[in-house]
Image (cartoon, rainbow, N blue to C red; front, side, top):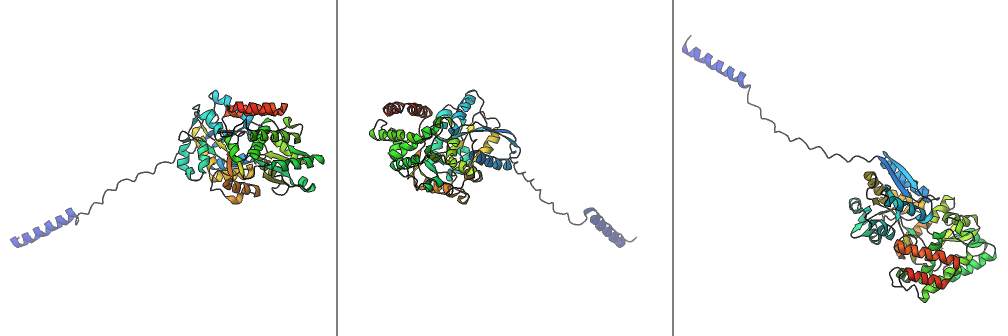
Length: 432
């Protein structure tokens, strides 16, 4: 083989070997991708049992609670609700049961409590509650609850409960048929009340229905408010108004006179039984908080048709306020479920389910006004424009010990009808 042929063959073989060995130009390596971080797992929905402790057993309030529990169950179906209720208006009996349980280290998951002194002076100061400020921050509630209400719920920089409503204590309810038959108008002043009461008594109708002892105190605070006006009434609880003054004496005289027009069996009746007297037509009027509206509706009555309402005599322009709320006890069983319950309590959805049935207005300012009836819309308007004063009987005005002293004084007075001794007892309770 000639050298030229050899060289050509050699070149061809080398080229072939290069093609085989290299397979063309080397491919570019794909960049290594960092593995995507998995999204954080959502916290597991709570399960187990949750005990809700309240005194809501009467018509309207029981149904309202059930409506809010249905909202909760729809969101947290794995939680079994224990609806633990203790009958007795204003929570008088329930509070005694709750106190025993809290002192014994056996708190319910969450419990109904009046916002303000009733919760703070009893359980917050005793270090038996967890603050719920974190919920207000997480849920944006600081922007949707009235600042004055948040102040009532707060102590030492923290918020301690979640309000589900706002109630008005100073409402006079009346049977419209009885008033129309007798040509009467709802009384606006104390003197007008006495005139209407005389007219009703003359035709054999009980002017004013009354019930057990706490309703006597409830009536008493509305007479104080109607006689003194909002500023002087509020001053009773701050020390600005003297319990020994002539103006307070006038209020006590008005209360004494009012008792002349109530049913004789008042001590044997619960608040809702006293309200039933108005439905039956046995009595014409009842002075009660607007939970009575929930009771009227539960009995098939329609606001503005079978029953009417007005501010209790003399108290027009004042809104005697209280709020039901729920808190987070320290050591509460199933804390996650309790927190979930509090979120529903404070939500627009929860309050719009509860309040139209209960007969109260929402604490949440974003609630749907169209869901509320004629009376409740009037209460929303009044709350926005009236002078707001705190209820004594329902835990907003005074410490529990002072409240109890007033309850005791009213109880003694209803039996004795000694106005001077009554005023002395009230002054002593106030430390004057």
